[in-house]
Length: 102
Image (cartoon, rainbow, N blue to C red; front, side, top):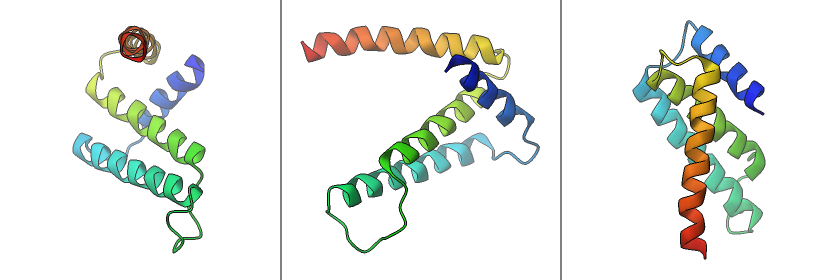
């Protein structure tokens, strides 16, 4: 997974037509909205849409956008360092989360 995330960072950094950071965060909001719609559709709470991705597909899109945004926020970090730092942060946040979950 770490290699794949580093590859995503490399790809986003090579994109000559990349959105500016504010555009990337707006795109993340759009992807989150699509995930919300996918969950609503899965739960049978909306019926007017037929071609929505699954929550898994939309979750993957969200993860890609987060990596893209972090890559822009930390342009001097190598992809490998950024992925390692993100892993460390997720581990730290997981410990904090566990205290809330009991």
